[in-house]
Length: 204
Ligand SMILES: Nc1nc2c(ncn2[C@@H]2O[C@H](COP(=O)(O)OP(=O)(O)O)[C@@H](O)[C@H]2O)c(=O)[nH]1
Ligand SMILES: [Mg+2]
Image 1: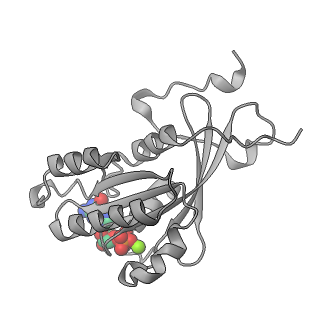
Image 2: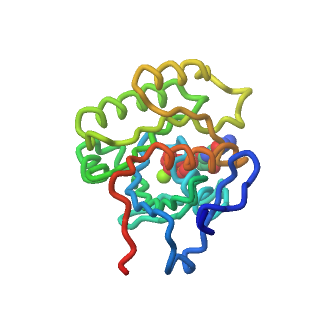
């Protein structure tokens, strides 16, 4: 077994974040994927990205990323590395006509709602339908119930998310960008579900 396949076993599926400067020569597979986040304004999309990419939560900052994107690379347990190029929607959830520009070519769509807001859960279902109709045919869809730390104000039962996701063949998870709960797990699970037929070959 090569060195690349013997990553340290981080307990409970923790995120393995690779040093972006150290991927010069490796025999492990590597994937690069475009990931978009969709969902109502205020559900925590930008906070999820910030938590994932920088390990931070800043309740005061306006962190929506505009035209550019952030990226983060993770290692999966089978030693595949996945570089996520993350497109956060800059509030164009209010301008649905612009959304196709964002999700075009996306390998992954993360559709987020707020567990304290049934309205946002309805909006999430709208996005799922939109992506099923107009997204790439092999797109990986993840449904995320965020703000799981606000369990005292919960209005969307976990079971509703589970059932909707099951019916639509999606991965489902509840997260908290605030406490970091399940954020790493979300991206690990997405990584596992990516199609593997076209790994990037290092030029040799
Ligand atoms: N309690 C709690 N608040 C959150 C969480 N994620 C985001 N927020 C708050 O929700 C608000 C909207 O977050 P933001 O990421 O800007 O939402 P976006 O419009 O979907 O990008 C901010 O005030 C955040 O502080 C979370 O997991 N828990
Ligand atoms: Mg935002």
